[in-house]
Amino acid sequence: MKFILGKKENMTEYFSPEGQVFPVTVVSAGPVTVTKVFEKSKDGYNAIQVGFGTQKESRITKSSAGAMKGGFYKTLKEFKLKPTDKNNSKEGDVIDISIFSLGDKLQVSSISKGKGFQGVVKRHGFHGGPRTHGQKHSEREPGSIGGGLRTHVPKGMRMAGRMGGDRITQKNLKVIFLDKENNIMLVKGAIAGKRGSLVEIISR
Image 1: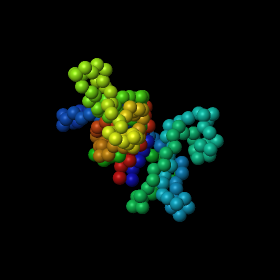
Image 2: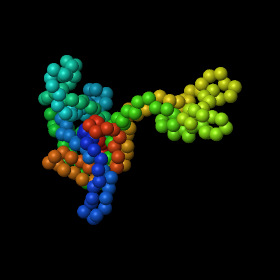
Image 3: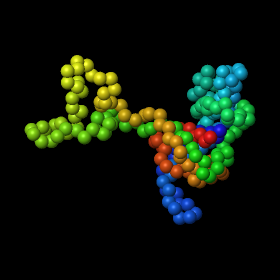
Image 4: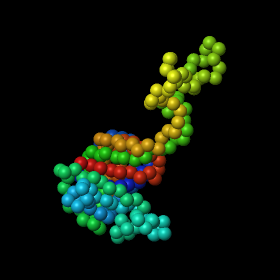
């Protein structure tokens, strides 16, 4: 299992040596430092905890500082291992993008852009009400929510509300370029989130 943390930079186009053009997301990936190794015999599960980014010591809580060995990190994340995954990592090891290869299939998780409070047309794709037959202001209204003789609103009814800010996991993305000197990875396809969003990258 290969994994790393990164930061979404922007989206652009990549021209391959064969002349093909691909939409890509630029990710500044790693390096990350192994801060703790969890073992099933002692902790009940197998996982590796890594630290990414730097942070001032004054901004770290005492409980977090106790888990940060070898430095003060902006982010701590655990990557759970399957029984079939080999684990040769030790505390203090540094992981960078050199563990990845061109063509690796990736599973990428990040937080999507927050869009605030939105109506049903934008949030759920409702087409709104008709503009004819005397209706003036119902173009973007949700319509009935009761459902006939029912005296309550059914659970799961799609209505207006907060949109975005969800954890999105995308599978089968692909590495098409690596700049190991500058820790830059180009991932084919779109990764959810704004510029600067934390990105979790896993390849099995």
